[in-house]
Length: 497
Image (cartoon, rainbow, N blue to C red; front, side):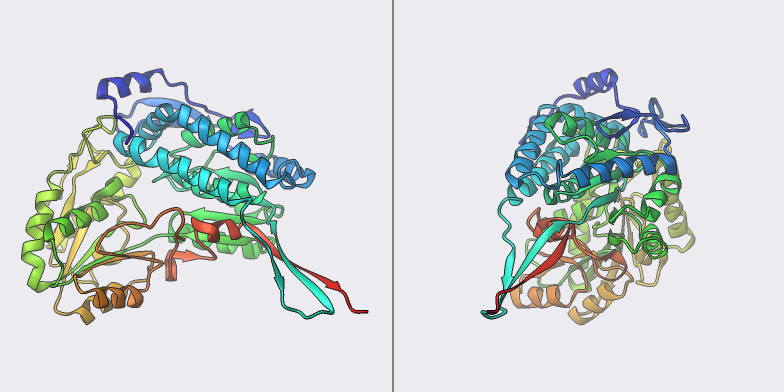
């Protein structure tokens, strides 16, 4: 495990940072064609960090043209897989060398706890890049059983120019989830980070070029969703878009595709994920720890957060007492203080949205059993409401904050029905000591990832994505992520005499 520094040391590093501010296109930093800027402030302090380029459709055109030129030249797309692997592994080394700088930059840009950035996010970025790098020269194509008069080869080819649009909740990790498989496949990439959290993406682009990724192959263009995201989605020379974010925005990308060149679209969207605890669950204290982590990790700004606790009434009282105990152990405060498990919300707009749900809970007279408070207009304390019905707004809508809704059920069958009664289907958890029952629940739950007796998302080797309105078109992570950045081609050779 990476050793953590002190608050004073992280603060000193933050004060000495010189973050990048311009987009990175065709191997170098480039200002917006209009000269416009977006102010970047530390969400925990309100202190100005830098100004980043507010790019436009004209800048997207330029970035896509350079990505297309690089792709067609074959400087990356036709490079031997072992050579692409070598360069991506060099990038891993450079990220590791700059890990502390990147972790601090991520924390002050997003409000994420520095301990998570240091011990989870940056190591996972390196692992994701190295996993896909090692995969690329170990994937074999296929032949089809077509008899002796022909040979049919099924080969993968890079899809072309990829537009990648990122969320703000895991900025550098989601960058790796998109960057690693697309570059491993041989594509060129035009990546748009969230306007709130662009700094680490720009720094990684600089390191990628330093590692040997050719100019034009990996570009990061900053700006708003309206100006840059839509331009990527509608661009006639972008072959594919991969997007992680809200379901509402994901719908727009499907529309952009239909209205432009029918580009392929892969969406990883929202969730209102159930965490089922059945009466026969064992080790209730450990279960409670997992429930708390599911609900409050990353301030609840997590698409796979277990925000609906569906618990059988026979075990509810004991479980809630343990949950409250563990939730009180999660300290909220300065994100650069490694003793804090919870930082601030990403910006004032999102803080206001989450805080509004606390007011809704008061108006609806929900039973507050923990939290319900805000701090400094930036922090929302871990909050738990009991007595929630599955039709209440707190159980239906994705809050994306540290708010847990407790729903009581009488039976296993009711638990499954309540869990599936949602427009989402990203993740779910079930806790039971009965292995047959838990595995049956895992099969019956309509979600892309189901964890048994734990909270999690699997790892880099397992696909991640959702059912229903939680996803579309593919999966992140695993060999399936690599495949979605390729096209399948059949080559038929007539061998008849």
